[in-house]
Image 1 (cartoon, one colour):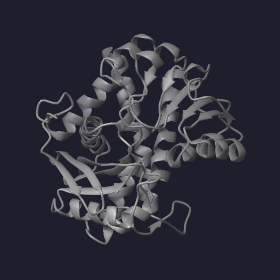
Image 2 (cartoon, helix red, strand yellow):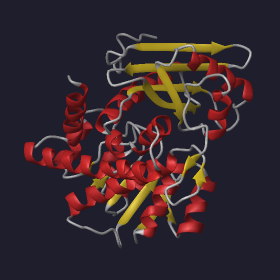
Image 3 (cartoon, one colour):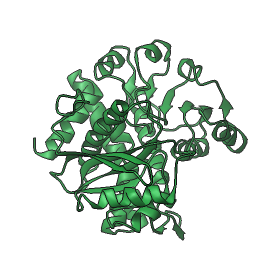
Image 4 (tube, one colour):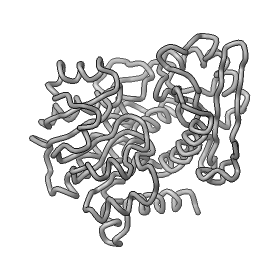
Length: 350
């Protein structure tokens, strides 16, 4: 399995494979860039079909974290960790203790946090073995009081303000009342986004691979449940991918009708050239690593300090960043991904 010649290898500084026989841990950590600071990125646990699929995911995700932190003006680099295993049946205390040891072996070059398939409980176990973990403690909540270290509420809020920016730019609307939104994936982040949208008066259509998640959105938010394959072709204003990546591909592109794609999922485009296909169709795409930066901003504030009000204000800066991306893309006739990449590289000094 090649690394240096891998299509998604992008001058990564370090790619490390970890295995612990006793716990069954099989994991990969990728450190993409530490120009702005230590590499920070979540620890994803997923039942990958192959080691190659896991490597591709960690390479792409770690690069995205570099650009995400740069666009969010954070003193952090980009990294990511993936654990190969079923997050519903393969977890154990020993597994995450071993993962904590693996993270610690990098000496602080990589800082981990929760991601798809992991949460606060897993971060707390890892924190027993390394200090290079975020999201394991209590935080000040936006509305007062305390909350746990789960960054997903901040991710959801960031995507919400990003959708406001996209709607204003593409549809010329300053409010979301009556806006039709299709959300693919209503787990922690997707459900949080759905709540914000519901409170703003939006109409919701949802799907999820886990029936319980979908049912919760229907029962608590009045969303309409649809089949996993139907979500793409709905006549809505916004399609919000909030599950795993590569969901915008040649097959789904043919079905998509929404004039805006803005969601929380990482690596939404299966291939870079799809950004140009979206532009030609008049579909406004909010680059994933720009719109879903709320979580990394949250984690950064946990490590560096700052009030909940300051955190909230920083997250709301996502709206301003996207406005700049959209405006420059329009002026230059370029894709939003090309502009976002360029802005990130500018902030990296490249």
